[in-house]
Amino acid sequence: MANPKCIEVNGRLVPWRELLKRRKEQLATVAKAEQPVLFALREDSRPVAERTAADRYREPSLLAFLTREG
Image (cartoon, rainbow, N blue to C red; front, side):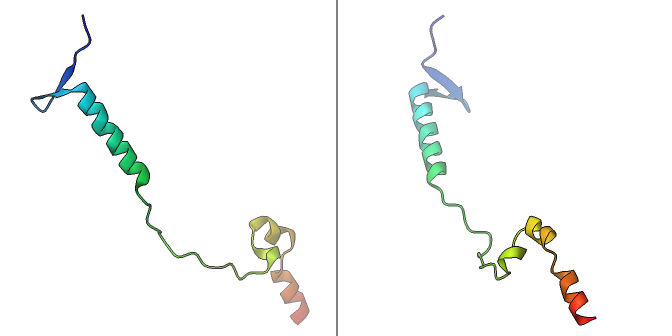
């Protein structure tokens, strides 16, 4: 049996080449689409030692403030 040259879509015969061409156009359009920004980026104003969880664990500053006041 030979490969079919057309496929039936919604009761219409559509050539495979046309279907593949449209699919490539769809993929190109999706690739070009720009993702909207969810929120504005802000500069991190914390000290360098407090920017990551590992650094905050390594150098806790909360206890340092409590012991100075007491």
